[in-house]
Image: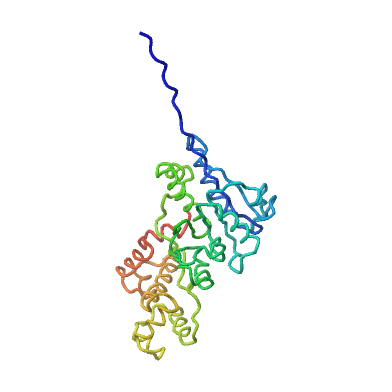
Length: 331
């Protein structure tokens, strides 16, 4: 008996996602190349291209990165038919004001995209367009206070490596764009693909700790009153001093309750938590300078070894010993 011919196996071809990168003169190079390499490796480890990437600028052609390297072959937004995801790369000058051409390119692409993302100070572009109003977002730890101050409708999360809120994704500084793009790959193609890409790039799937490993309490916005400025200057000058709520309130000629309200209004935290962060910043530097854990606890004002360990665990997600090992040297 002859066999019936086997039905040909039909393979469903999934369309590659189209990713548009907003670039411009002065852009931070790694904000662009880090995510690009993640997407390239996602294509390499797959059995078919998963992403098509395009650099987009106001006039097309070449743009010059802050490092001086020229990025060629960029396209104008009107020359692009479709885009699924927009990624806005950052640059230091965006903090002082976003150029109109960067806003117009981003707005034009975002109108057609299902997902809009930023790397580092690229969040200032999304915020300036009103995309982040009423949403959680992050940026480079050094610019988090400026983002919160310039765009008070944005709920700035200074310690996150990347934040997703609706169709908007924002990442922390520079190399955190790699973390954000790995998250995009995982959402699109699953954890195994993202893990394969991370392994190829020799990076963490999820880094230990957050931006608090690198940020400082001095990144908080400057106090609006001379009284509060005098208090914060005193604490910053001598973190190990007696900075109890009672003493701080007395120095400010306020009740403890009123001082707490003022701190909440200015810094979105309590006096005691702010003092702890200042002391933690001091402890981080003391450890990197070679001090023992016991000496660090005493000189920083955190007191005991156990209090120091608890502060590191609570804010940094690591131990003092591990922090020193990870950040003191590359050896």
